[in-house]
Image (cartoon, rainbow over all chains, first blue to last red; front, side, top):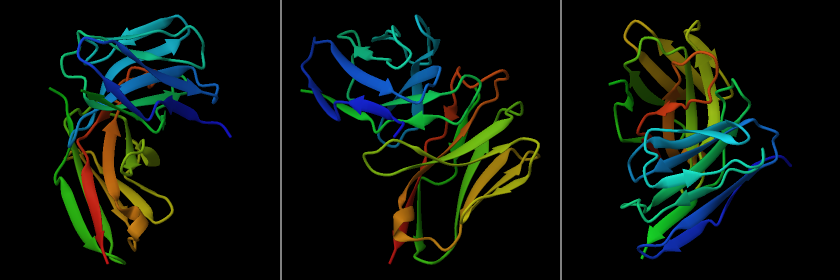
Length: 112
Length: 115
């Protein structure tokens, strides 16, 4: 079945560490996105990519980095520069020009 | 700035009753709206969408109404069931030429179904 997979489901980070969240899709979607969700808040866009080897900053890109070396994969690195990284991270994908995003099941990141 | 928001953070309804979840948007240029359902610990799932050239769209047990005059969007769920318990988000994209520059999401309404 086609879908979008995020891993791990839960992730713990020590202060000062970088961690990478995985996002893989087999939907043949061109565009991929990373959102951050905090309790009681809507989704905020971190980064998005419309094509391989290209990506754009969203509203809250500071402290995060991404890569898009393959169409299927869009990993997100939460760097030590992100001072408040504890949140639920959602990856999504869509066909280029389409607004009906398919979301992964999310990664919950906690700083310990 | 532009925003998409919901009137109530929590809505509690009796099982079998109809639910109405509301959303206000401020960007009059918005031309596409989506409702998503998010169950606890999961990613959002698409429910229904509507374009700005429509006032109403129906799906299975769900109806979305769009009032462009007052920039208001609502999601109606008929005969609510326990499985409808979730957080519901509206989202808009007022950008033309594609959705890759991101949807703007509201903060969500938590729908609670009382037995």
